[in-house]
Image (tube, rainbow, N blue to C red):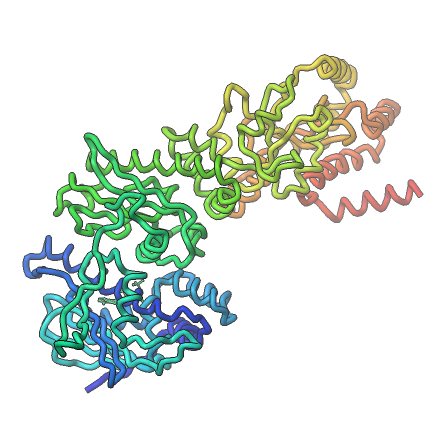
Amino acid sequence: MSERFSFQAETKRLLDLVIHSIYTNKEIFLRELISNASDAIDKLRLLSLTDSKLTFQNGEIWILADKDKRTLSIIDNGIGMNKDDLINHIGTIAKSGTSEFLAKISENKANNIAELIGQFGVGFYSAFMVSDKVEVITKKAGENVAYKWESYGEGEYTISEVEKENNGTEVKLYLKPVDEENGIEDYTDEWVISKIVKKYSDFIQYPIKTYVEDKEKKTKEEKILNSMKPIWRKSSSEIGSQELEEFYKHISHDWNKPLKHILYKAEGTLEFYSLLFIPSKAPFDFYFQGYKGGLSLYVKKVLIAESYEDLLPKYLRFVKGVVESSDLSLNISRETLQNDRIIVQIRKNLTKKVLDSLFELLEQDRENYLNFWKEFGNALKEGIISDVDNRNKLISLLLFESTNSDSKLTTFKEYLGRMKEDQKEIYFIASESRVIAENSPHLELLKQKGYEVIFLLNPIDEVMIQYIPEFEGKKIKVIGRGKLDIESEDFKERKKEVEKKSKEMKDFLSFISKELENQIKEARFSENLISAPCCLVGEEYDISPSLEKYLKKENPLFTSSKRILELNPFHPVIQKMYEKYRSNSSEESLKDYCELLLDYSLLSEGQPVNDPVKFNKIFANLMEKGL
Ligand code: ADP
């Protein structure tokens, strides 16, 4: 009796893409199935450590071909699957955001398929690139009933009970006819199988066996196709680049080449092997809340955890790789592992290693570092906030856009190299967009002095910068907050004059403050404005309007704080207003002008005016008078 099931909608769509794919590198199906077989053996091996009912002897993977029937079986003696597993793991894609992603990848392009399969770890489905029909015959370790799953990849599959002696899984492919032009070789051929295994799966730690025919003796002999040596235990010179890439794909399910690898063996009091990778592309869900990173942790060659998160701080969750330690105990639980002295030590070492490698990349290969930065830069910014011990290292890895036109992104150090002799602070401006920042009145004075200003264009930039009070003795200054510390004769002169004006026009400033009291903290004169009549600033520890807007979106209860309206006492608009005020302080139009000053300031930083209807009315009125 077989039961009929429909694939979940997403799976159907995926299968459709895979089956009709023009992707020619079809041989990778074998890599994917071997990879699954190896994972299944890992799982059984690990469970058998804690579950006395399960026994594990030796893991092995068999590849058996039948030339006449044109079938190919990949057989493992791993954990196996029961009926629920088959339904939940083979017919369903549980990853969040799948539908959105599938909708995006609607065109059937070869590299899209690669990315698609990679992003979802849907390796099993690649079997349908080379098969008309796939059967999975499987029995879960510790259970009595075995099942057969069958599908032509066309929307439906069936499950029935079958006889099977041992635990484990056989994936049986009914191969499509050989079609070299479309990338389908004869996968029943020993030589072809052997070539593919060597190319993609050499490092798999269980023997991958097949039978080869001895033509003279007319017998079939068992042969192991892979070398089985753990790649992370090899020395750099022993590892080929293809081998490295294939291993990366095996552990990461990412089909893009990694950007960089780090092979590191710790010696001394703490000993461990590690092979880490920096991916070249962020997974589509990387910046989602629930994204899980983690490294594979081996203890004495046994895989203890596949994505173990405590081996690196959270902000380095983009790093993939393997760690093997012989100092840890095999049957340690996850909870105790977390606080294990050795884990803490490994984590410290690895963090340093990763940051050093990134620094090396920055110094030696800027182009690739820019690529890294585009994908994972925001994760490093999280590190500035959370990793006090490595903060200085992380600061040197940061890149920013700035007013300096000849380099698009700059490091702190490069900025320092361009600083003017009399410049005392490193300047930043927070804004939603570069254009608004560039034209901000806040920038005027600094531009005139030739001081470079760094743009903080992402909400996290501004939060992060609060954790960096200074760099190499230079204070960090976010402009638009508090006072600027500029030390030059002309600036001091200007300051004095502004102070004088503030005293002289005290009543006028109070008048404006009073008029706008519901919207601003106060009105005051500033020495920082040149061509603009006014702008809004915060206090030293206030946040910028762009961050405020972001926080409001996240939390509607967030209340904004009032800011200060800074006026340019030398600007004709301010001077004329003052004259009008002196001749008749109760003149009605003065109130309108106060409103306009505020709206002007808001617009210049890309904010909406408070009351657009009123703004329009005043504006039309003024135009009429002026015309
Ligand atoms: P992934 O391996 O990335 O999870 P696959 O589509 O290749 O994606 O496999 C889906 C799931 O099916 C696996 O996670 C595993 O639970 C199960 N599975 C696949 N092959 C086997 C196997 N040989 N033995 C046991 N379980 C398997």
